[in-house]
Image 1 (cartoon, one colour):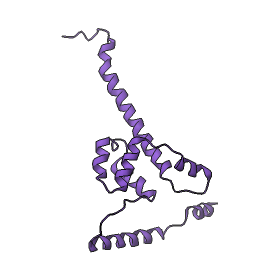
Image 2 (cartoon, one colour):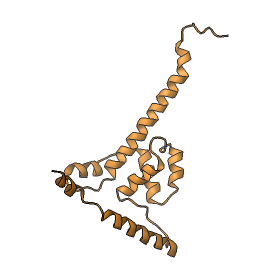
Image 3 (tube, one colour):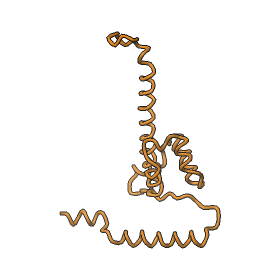
Image 4 (cartoon, helix red, strand yellow):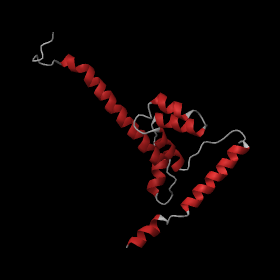
Length: 144
C-alpha cells in the first residue's frame, strides 16, 4: 500500500502533466482555427484592414482542410470529428461560421425537385424574417 504522506516525485506527475498540456494545446488550436476562419472568410471591403487580413493571412493547415472539404461538398461532420475540430466549437458553430460568411459548398449535380422546393421555401422564410428587423446602424441611431 502506498504511503499517502509520501512526497510526489516528478515521474508521478509526467502523465497528468502531459495530458493537461495536450488538452490545453488542443483548446488553443481549436480557438485559433475558428478565429482565423473569421478573418480569412470575411467579405468586407470597407477598409484596407479587412482586405489585408483576408488576402495576406496564412491559414492554419487544419482550417484549410476544413475549407476544402466544405467547398467540395465532402463529409464535413466526419472531417470535423477526425481532426478534432468539433471539440471546442460544435458542428453547428462551424456551419454558422462558413454559411454566415456567405461560403456555401458548390453542388456538382442537379438538385431534385424536392430539394429545389425546399431551398426556395428556405430563402423565402429567411428573406421574410430578415425584413422584419431594422438595419443595425438605423437601430443604433434610433437609440440616441
